Amino acid sequence: MPLRLPARRVRDQIAHRRETRRTLRQPSGFRIALADTIAQLAPDAWDDVVDGESWFFSRDYLAMLERVPPAVVEPRYALISDAQGPVAAVVLQWAEVDGTRLRPLRKSGGEDDELNPLRRLVDRLSRPARAAFASRLRERVLVCGNLLTYGQHALAVAPDVEPDSVWPAVAEAIYRLRRAEKLAGQAGFVLIKDIPLADNSGVAQLGDLRYRGVETEPNMVLALDPAWKTHADYLGGLTSKYRSAVKNQILQPIEQAGLVVRAYVPTGGLARRTHELYLGVHENASLRPFTLHPDYFAELAATAGARVRFTGLFAGPDDTPEALRGFMVMLADVDEAFAYHIGYAQDDPQGLPLYLRLLHASIADAIALGARSLSFGRTALEPKARLGAKPQDMQVWLRHRQPVFNRIVRQLVGFAHHAQAPETNPFRKA
Image (cartoon, rainbow, N blue to C red; front, top):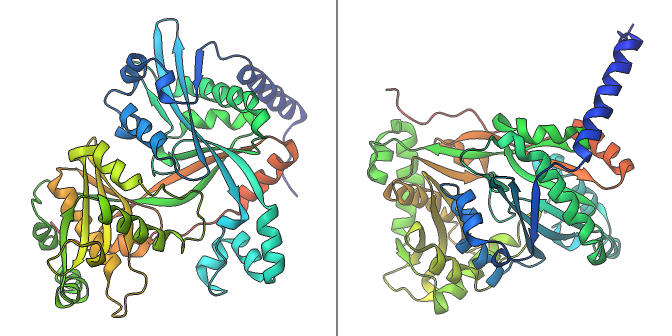
C-alpha cells in the first residue's frame, strides 16, 4: 500500500507553499528599471554591477548585438537596485519561435529521434500537413539570458551582494516586462537559460512561482593544463592511442589535402564567406531559434578586438573567400575561452574531418589566449569527450502563463531526456 502523509502534515505543506508563493508574488522591495536598449540605462550603474563578470554582460557587446540583431530576437534589459544602489543586471530577449525553425529528421529511429519527439511528429506529417503545422506553430518566448551564448549570461550581481537574494527581483522584472508588452503579443513561455546544476539554489526559489527546471545536454568543458604552451604540448599529454588517432585521422588528412590552418579577419568577401559557411551548419540544425545577421561576424571582430580569434581552414596559401573551407571563432572571457561559432563546407567531396580539425584549432587558440578552460558548448558530446572535455550539467527553467500548460510542463519535465556525455579519459596518467 502507498504511504500516506498525516493530514496535518499535508495541510502544513500546503499552507507553507501558499505563504511562500504569496511572498514571492508581492513586490520584492527592489527598484527595477526596464529598458529596450542598453543606452537607456545609466552606464556607470550597469558597469559597476558587471565589473569582473563575463564580457557578454558588457555594454560594448550588448550594443553590438543591437546594431546587428539576430533574426526574430529583440533585446531587453533590467537594472535592479536597493536603497544603496545597483545590485544586479539582467539580460533578456524576446524571441519568436515557429514551426519553420524545426528541421524534419533525415531518418527515423536512433537516439536523435528519441530525444526530439516534436521533430519526430513533424517528420511523420505529409508535406502539406507539415507546412500547415509550421505556419500554425508560433510562440512568443521571453528569454532570461542570451540565446547566442551557452552558460549563465542572464544575471550579473554586484560583488558585495549575495546572488541568491536577487532572484525574487529577477522574477518581478520578468513579470513586469511580460505585462508591459502585452500589446506586442502575449508571451506564452518564460525561459531562464543555462543555469549550472551545481549552482541553482537561487533560481530554484522560483519553483513556488510554477517555474520548472529541466536538465539539458551538458556543456562540455576542457580543463587546460598550465604547462601546455602549444597544441603540441596538449597532444603530448594524450595517451599514445588517442595521440596517434588525432595525427593519423585528423591532422594528416587535412594537411595532405593541402588545407592550411591560419588566423584571418572577417571583412569584405571573407565576412560574407564566413556567414555563408555558418548558414551551411545552421540550416542543418534541428532547432534554429535565431539566425545571425549577415554583418554579425565583422562587427564581432571589430568589437571584441584582441579577445576574439577567427581561425580558418584555407585551401592553399591564398586568403581569398573561395579558399576558406571552414572557420572557428574563439573568444576569451575572464579566465575561460569559448569555442563560440563554427562553420564549414557541407559539400566536401573528400569527406575530410573539417569539424574535428577546427575543434583542435580551438584548443591551440585557447592555449595561446592563456585560458584556464575551454568551453565547447552542447551537442556532439562524444567527439568533445574524446578531446578530454568533461560535462558541466546545465538546466533551463520554464514557466507558461496558463496554469493548465504549467501542469503539462510539470508532467513533461518528468519525461525529459537528453544525451549523456560518454566517460572518456584520453590523457596519460600523471
